[in-house]
Amino acid sequence: MRPASYVALLLGGMLFGFGLAWSGMVKPEIVLSFLRFEDFGLLLVLASATGTTFFTYRFLPKLLKKPVLEPSFGAHHQGPLGNTIKGAALFGIGWGLCGVCPGPAIAGLGTGNWPLIFSVIGLFAGAWAQGWWASRSAH
Image (cartoon, rainbow, N blue to C red; front, side):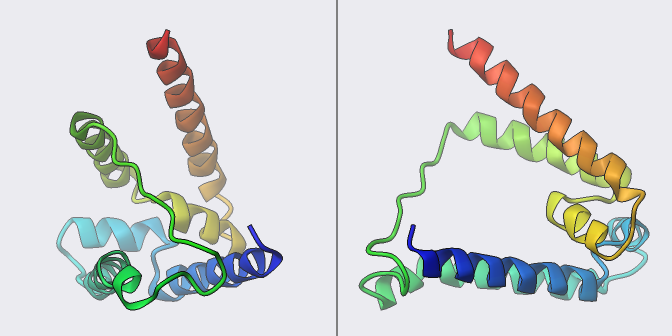
């Protein structure tokens, strides 16, 4: 990657974290109230993220011959659908139990929401366990 790409990634990550903090997604109690259908404020955040992602993946490669800061668009490998469904279900269960998503958990630490450190430790432990399991299954 080019140095300008790293700067763009840093700025994009900062903007993303700011958006998560501003929307309230860094507060598990707000997320849980959304998941219990008590507060629909995060619906706008969900719709915005879905629309932006759809547009970016579907239309941007057709509008641009190449990315602004890189020589070509990368390929996005899609693994077996079964693994995606299992991962999504596990993610949804964890999200519903604690109201914490990986991005907002890390951004929440930046806002001083220190109890989220336990969720971040759990995220890293889960990622390590998945990697360990996948490496055992590959042999």
